[in-house]
Length: 388
View (cartoon, helix red, strand yellow):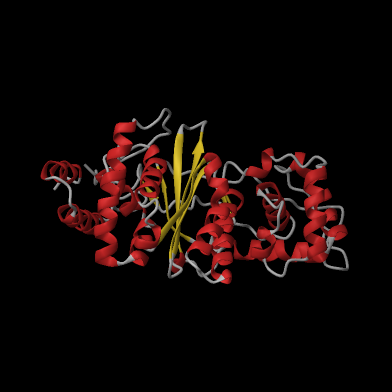
């Protein structure tokens, strides 16, 4: 039964029992037949991008509502449920857990050919899949390492991403949802929801709207050229051990900081921890190689910078910190989790549980269960799991 108060899911180990997976596939197929017939493939893809709806569907299919394995097993069960019938459903599910996630672009390309999609549409789907993974691994630096990436798309071009990361130290998992209609900018507030059992005090989030200025400065730094950018990187290296101290600033005639530099006071009451305190700015051949590459290519905007092969979390972080410490363009350090199972509870912290959304979701899924061709006993069990 879906809990409407406080819930939490931790990082699971082990495997889903074969008998349970088989039942999830069977029920999942029946549910998809009904839901696609009732609402169409585009609407089904849209609902997958809703954290509450996704969690509820996993519960209906008999997986533990508070288990991180719900994400990987539900995706795998749905993918297996429509195997061989993707054209009939008008829906494709690519990717999955671990090594399977890295095959997502190839799967999308293969299905683009099978469904006779325009090449431009297929290429765009591949690009969106890659960028969503890049954003949640490089721009959202929350300590959760991605290990699951699933890409849902319809023949009409609607797409959704459901990917999950793990934090082994905290033994928790975090799920990221994307939906095509909600994405006006792939690098600025692109998520339809982020589900997490915990919210963190400090997260470098370069995908937040509040990081607009930081993204602009990063792009300008890259366009300025390698020599100019490396001067700023060298300043960070020189002063990284003294970031809790205040130094005097002297601005040169060209408007750039001189060798005397004022760095942020990182021990103010505004925050007690800043990722730059423990950042290692020692010489990095790899970082310098990537910076040389992007400064040579001079991407016209931040999205193209992020899309550059080789650009990852450290490159993004280095430019963000240069922009903040030297040029005063602070990025967002707020956790972007939109839906927290642990904190969206009765005390309304950080926000009240949306009972209306839960009720609508349960009602829709309950009606879908009733319309399936399952035996009455199986329907009753599914409805019991919804609390109906």
